[in-house]
Length: 329
Image 1: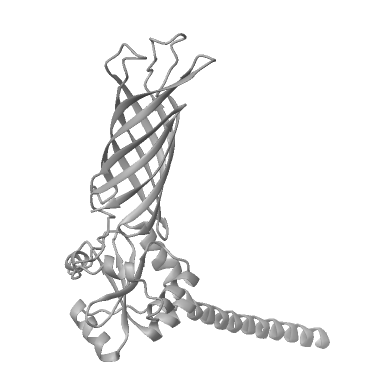
Image 2 (image 1 turned 30 degrees about the horizontal axis):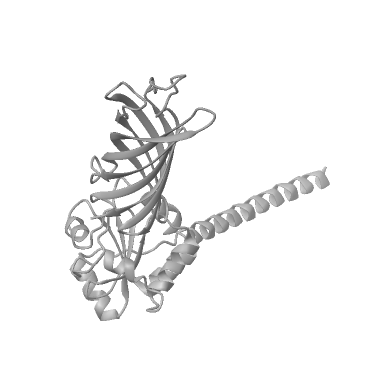
């Protein structure tokens, strides 16, 4: 009986000690895990002028996260990239870091000075306020650190980026991310090949929607089995474009739809005009702030028929592809 009592006390003491050991181990591991995950880029709390003064005094570049409160990619950068250990250590050691909303407070003046229209804009600025390097859009941690290393190396600083954000340089290439753009396109409607010009307005409604107008010359292809003829006709397009934010550095996607007026040639149609519609899904690849090329896939529908030709073949209907380039002003 005495032996059983001793064994019971021993088991209770053993269980108590084990539970305490487990509790302290869990607390220690939880603390260290939380501490390890708490690193982030430390952003300055002062105003822009104070940040520039500190940059000049410490001879460090400013890293400016120029963001907007509604920007989804900005939030992902803040959550997943700025909190990366390697990123936090490198930026905290080498830069004066600032994070400013470009659509409120002093950010409005900063956005105007540096022509910030795409979010996020990741800028590296010296103590005199001159942009020396930068990029737009979301980056992965490794890319982000490499961008920072390049910003510190005069041989790798991107002069094109520098000019695009430097409002004081009369020769600067202006960012066309929210300015009027003029584009050239090559189009394929069904069998009809064509070329055209178009204009895209500045973006509005939180810089996500724009108006596009364009004109195209198409070649209607017809074959009677012996001879193939190409006859020109024209169309005029007006549509609305809605873009996403940048999906990665320099790449964005958009959707567009609208109406077009076909002006057929009298050699193959008795109609003076035909009204139709179109819709496309596009990819934009921005090489420089003032220059981009694009690829669009979609469809057109008009019901247009060449009623002066045997069989009354249709045209300006079906699958649509567009490729081209555009320049901002």
